[in-house]
Image (tube, rainbow, N blue to C red):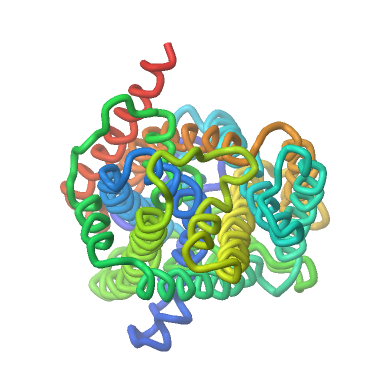
Length: 482
């Protein structure tokens, strides 16, 4: 393999082409705001499970002493996201396609990552949790077991609204991005205002200490909850992998040469089944560094800082208002903070906080409704000539077919268990995914990137650290289940 060119090790996928590296947008505030986006979608996915559900659950059970897991998890996840993005910037392909280019080939790895995507995100727990908040707004109280029919019906409606949003706009990624900007912005604005005006300085001090006291563990801990909390502090497993699929559609680096998945009502856009690479020269290295500036803002400032900030806000509110040892679970899990805040500030804050929770959880389900079908579509699109021939090579035939199948399954899965149970299942699957993806990303970047574009050793060490961190938590869970 010569520098600046990549050749797939197997003939199962279309070989990578060559093209000129698009020039990065100027690094000015206006252009940065127009360029970033995948980090916003990733933050929208992150804030619903880790920050809103699992964070307060951990605080109620153990206080702030486990918040350091969020600090470690978010830093490691950002570094993992950046290394997956490295492949996408160079080839224009999402990282899953890079995984499929490694031995034993696309049939094996495509199946593995499709199954893992389903095991983590095939359980629409966020739609159900969001529906419990919607039901609470209608009933004026936390729904109970007798209200299961209403909650499930609203879960159907929540799931359907997510699907409807994916149908609108010229580019699915852009529609999702705009929706996430609106929801995440409103959520963080409300939580910030409430935290600043209601949380004591002593509570803020305990919260900050929790984020910095690395290594503290409570005795008799529920390792299933702890591992889930660490996995969903940030996006979690395949949610991190999906970020490169959104980067491809956003047009980061060489992704600007391969196309994107258009909305249902948009005109047909050609999405190439393979990426393109560029020759490494002094000029392209300068452009490469320019693209990295935008990626750093997208991942460190939007995804990373947003994930830490979201957890800090909900953790501080939980410490201030939720009674230690409060039982978390059942149909009221999504509304625990609202109940606690209303006990102090009155019923108006109950309604506003429940509505905020509804949006938080809806944003996560929206990201999943696009992310899972998008990943499966890219797997099928890159690996199957037969799929690319459907409707004259219109990728929407594959994407929306997968979306519909996911919707039908989601309608069934909504009836299987309570929301927190569904989310805990997916979160622990995410821990295993982190172990696999961290090592696989290291392999891909060493195999396919020219030396000048490969990461420094400390970044490779960070990938190994990610695998060790989540692997240790996963082993702890399995050991206690045996």
